[in-house]
Length: 175
Image (cartoon, rainbow, N blue to C red):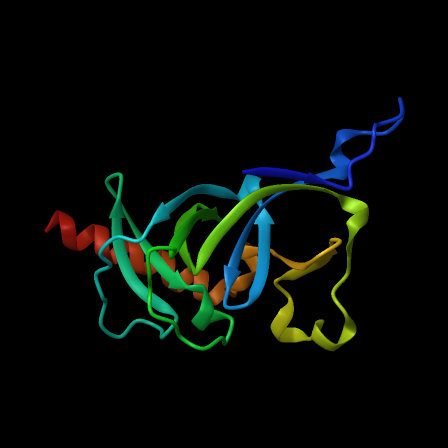
């Protein structure tokens, strides 16, 4: 489902770059969104292979279209309480810095097009060091959506660890 909110007819000088195209998803009672251009795919949950000694937010690895990719539990990474997976649980596949990673979310809602002027910076109270991944907040008539930058959800060090992890898995497969 695609929903378009806050768009007005454009005058000659106004560009379409004012329109954000987002994929919205839920973690608990909160609604989040990411730019659709950052997403390679949205998939139903499949069996995840656990990997010993991996960070607590790494659920494991999967083989997707012949590629091994780490799966991150976004709830754990953001410090939210754990929840059992159900028929609505999905993982969002994202490429960041030449690494393909899956992020588990409770459910994916819709593709949403909103005018950029419906967003504003996050409130100061949540704009601390642990929320650098929150790019803005969209205020819609009936809800508030937190816009995330999934590239910033993981630190450079964590991304490097996941990259090393992928290389190790590929080397083990060749052996």
